[in-house]
Image 1 (cartoon, protein in one colour):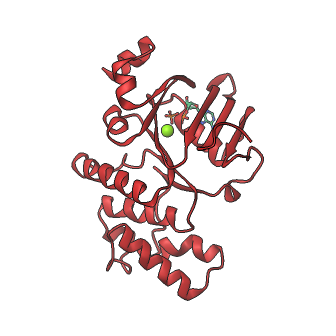
Image 2 (cartoon, rainbow, N blue to C red):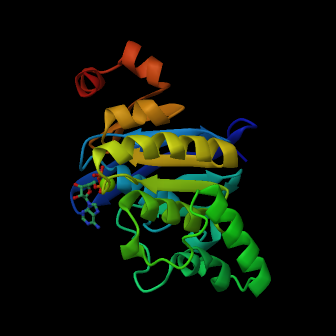
Image 3 (cartoon, protein in one colour):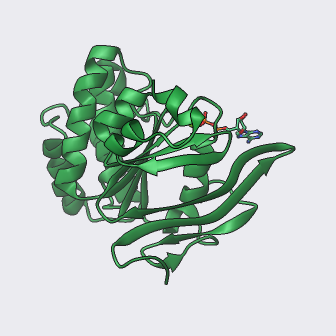
Length: 240
Ligand SMILES: Nc1ncnc2c1ncn2[C@@H]1O[C@H](COP(=O)(O)OP(=O)(O)O)[C@@H](O)[C@H]1O
Ligand SMILES: [Mg+2]
């Protein structure tokens, strides 16, 4: 056990090197249950690496990870109760929307009728009811991302990780989707961590922002705190 009662995720002294490159340098932070936290930093600063280590897709060199008070450092990705929406984690092109969302449920051997009910519920949740039979290429970028969210939420994970989920979407739709996603996450009540290099996106969406530079945490705080009180020259510069 570790942290405070309402801590849901905790990383402690995570280090990660690729050859001689430091991608994670003593990364320590905690996320409260139900919060939406943004990992913000420039390209190459180590954001994706942190998410992959948390998800169990990449081993850390050292350090510990706790989810719901349980040490999961050696628990496989599939058993960490995590849903993903990754930038390059595309939909299955040759499956329709229904089958894309149903995928994880089938893997978990849900009964046919339960799958149908759950997919219908998710379609309604993400506002896509009626588009079950469409294929990904028959959807807009924004609709595709909604399917990706529905698929990630299907098996009721306790933690949602999103890696630059709006990167491939044009600016106008991106803005709408951000607000939509923020609202959806608070409605579902799922603890979530998203990665972005976009300050505006982080400020608009996150309850709390973690600013990363060269594999190191520069500052953690609410959007107002980090803007009003940048603690390092990097943060000052990056947010201006
Ligand atoms: N599998 C890997 N092998 C070698 N270097 C890697 C690997 N994955 C990431 N890196 C390096 O680690 C650094 C951080 O990468 P990443 O976590 O993807 O940053 P970000 O998501 O912030 O853009 C980058 O310099 C990248 O080139
Ligand atoms: Mg990345």
